[in-house]
Length: 162
Image 1 (cartoon, rainbow, N blue to C red):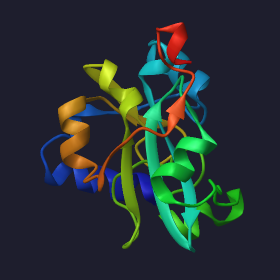
Image 2: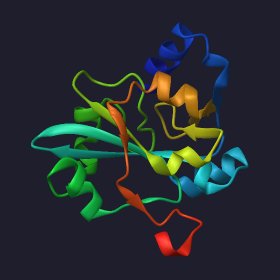
Image 3: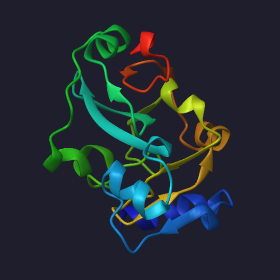
Image 4: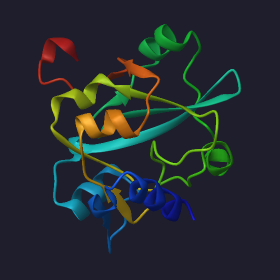
């Protein structure tokens, strides 16, 4: 059902032709990169968190990891992921297909600066066998983010920044 909601969303903005339905699983960054024949860092992984019982999503590059200190600096709370079995209830998508589109009301979306290195990225499209090819500008427009954040590490090409 999540995939259908995402497809309807992209039908409405004229970009449903960008959705890729995959034979292989795209539930993990590595699986998605293999299925899409791209580098893992071009996968826009979407992580689900709770802050004061409010769900939020952080979309980050596939090679990035949430830095707890940066997360706390941005959100003033420790990073606490939504338990796997509760993700769909809070977000509207099951793990492996979580994306920043067609969400339940009240879910805030944040885009991490780790994505800004790329012209093209691939977030999930609502299930574990789909993705959508977007430019960074399109992701920014259609994910409706609250704002850009810098809450990840492990992705910089500059070793001094890691």
